[in-house]
Amino acid sequence: MNFEQLLYIVEVTKHNSLSIAAQNLYVTQSAISQSITSLEKELGLKILHRSRGHGAVPTDEGRIILKQAYEVLRKLEEIKETAHSFNSMVEGELKVSSIPGLTTILVKALAAFKQDYPQVNVEINEKSSSSVIEDVRQHQIDIGLIAYSPDWNINMEGIAFESLFEGKQKIYVSKHSPLAFTGAISSHEILDQTLVTYYGEFMQHFVHDFFNKYQPMKILFTSNNLDGILQAINESLAITFAPDFIMKNYPPVINGEIIPVDLVNHRGLNISFGLVLSEDKHISILLNKYIHYLKSEITKI
Image 1 (tube, rainbow, N blue to C red):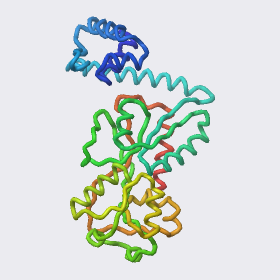
Image 2 (image 1 turned 180 degrees about the vertical axis):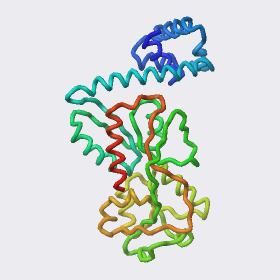
Image 3 (image 1 turned 60 degrees about the vertical axis):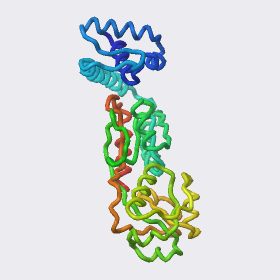
């Protein structure tokens, strides 16, 4: 048994495919097949069922072996990380993805992180929650920051989710709107209003849930351009739903052009905002450090 054999069975299982594993590991498919067969003979049991129609699927015994293989590979990564940490100048790369609206938190954490680790390259991207989860599952990124609710039909297999905070959903209106002076408003009192919505999974789930509980509202437009949404509100053309922790950092809200109003008598979806990590990927020292800075920024919300 050797390192490559464990790496091969883990990579094949991740994609249920020898060919994809071969491409990712830059070896031939036959080399992977022969290596797995050799390991199975050495252990005296079948680790993977391999067929043209169903790809490569772990056997019951194979699942137990794979769990231990993941642990061995993680330990090897820890050894490399420990040795690397002894170097005077820490170098490396982190890939992070977030849903729109939370990027500001990631960047603030990055600014603090880079002061202590200037040689570490951090790449940040904005994506939908489901895309972030899939990238984490496929090890395309190291960590993600998403909105999540158990009510959503999202595949969380192999994903560890850590809830960090919950945002309060509010209504945002122009300072010239009569609603701006109410302080709080019930759901039924806004049903005659025109709505602009952000084109994101979190907001679309919320709006769909709201319409189902009450009635559909007139929608002026849906966009992923937040500046356009803010302009429509500022011009008194529409109102919007949004979490307070996202909107409070935008200039029109800061300077009072757009007013937040509490939404009462409405139990929204149970939505948390937090970190997603792969259950089968080693958390590096650098990633742990960045998570520390990230959580420090979140405590300021």
